[in-house]
Length: 107
Image (tube, rainbow, N blue to C red; front, side, top):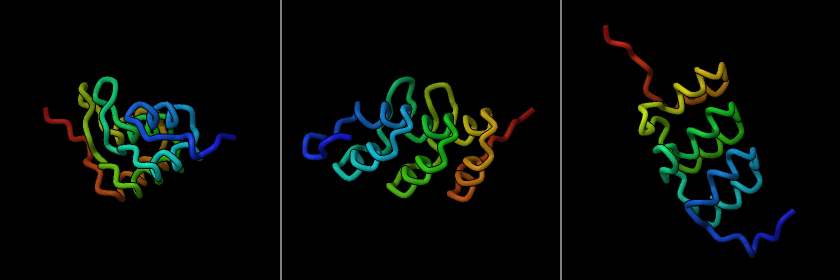
């Protein structure tokens, strides 16, 4: 466990908490003011990481904290696309209910 009074928000703290499936730490960081929409490596945001991992609880937490449901990474990937690519159907449905854009291929 960790002592919450020593946790300070940082743009660098939330993504590792998400990648480590630390919902408890992500909640604390969001309460302390971490940016839910801050782009990190390759333009990925915390919602990209949670969606890629298929973590429904973290995706829901981030959306409730104000995460944009359909940002694109530097490579054009949305959280919805990453969840679909990983076969995380519950996350796909959750993102779709939050008005995430759908992938449309133009031939």
